[in-house]
Amino acid sequence: MKLLKPFLCSVLTLALLGLGACGGSRAQSQEQTESQPSPERKAAPFSADSAYSYVVAQVQMGPRTPRSEAHTRCARWIEDKLRSWGYTVTLQRFEGKDYYGKAAEGTNIIATLQPEAKDRLLLMAHWDTRQVADQDASSSAQSQPILGADDGASGVAVLLELARQEALQPSGKALDFVFFDLEDGGRGGDDDSWCLGAQHWAKQPHRAGYTARYGILLDMVGAQGARFYWETASKQFARPLLSALWQTAAQLGWGGYFVQADGSAMTDDHIPVIRELGIPSVDIINYDPTRPTGFGSHWHTQQDDLNIISIETLRAVGETVATTLRDEL
Image (cartoon, rainbow, N blue to C red):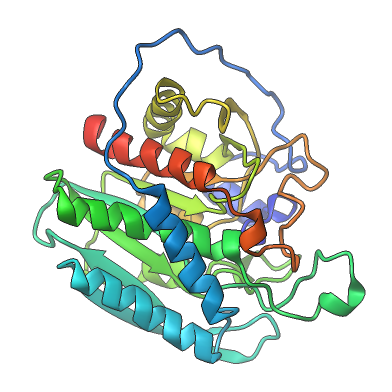
């Protein structure tokens, strides 16, 4: 995928998940649902300006690709942020491969405030960036890594701000924040080459017997004009959570971003989590089936830089997730 590969969902994955045949990237029915008028809700605390500053910090490091200095710096930066807010942080090292098939060490970063609580909620994003701009219109740019302001940095930024707010004003919920590595080094036609960090963690969690009631994955959640449709596996395996998130968005005034209609089946970090651990998980991802590729025009190109980031989009996603976590779960 970019990390998701709507056109490349494998028969094996679909069989394991019970999703049926892939049938291209567009779902068979759009099933548009009209939202009933709802009273306005007060959003839970979330600073979009703070989230934006975290996007900027990551982009300024450069592409966070395997074996690069920026990759090492970013892992340390995420860890330091979480520890400074009082989180227990676990670094899970694992062996994987990069886009070119070369050996690469990955690091999953897991943070929690209440490690002993049983009723847990899981929040996820990937922090690495793609080594090639394979969708760029310029052939000379296609072999260069992307900055990943949206594809990588935005999900991390929203997760970090959610973690910061939770430390400042605890909700009492037992939350785990997992930042996956080596997500975006996959190749077309090889589903197993994507989401390596999530695959590893789902098979070997940081704690034996780990489980959570629900999971929420954030992927490409910061671009101007973003649209978040219902992802297929999310709808099938975590429909109550999906409904709560999209309804909360509508009540907060963010219904223009969270479109209540079918999108596509994605190969993304939530799939191993559902498949291996049985945790019902929702993928909030910028994918609009009416676009040529479904993704934004900046996807896997050199245009995935700070110019594409919208503070309002970050706010829409952050407030929606924060409010759902505090009020609905």
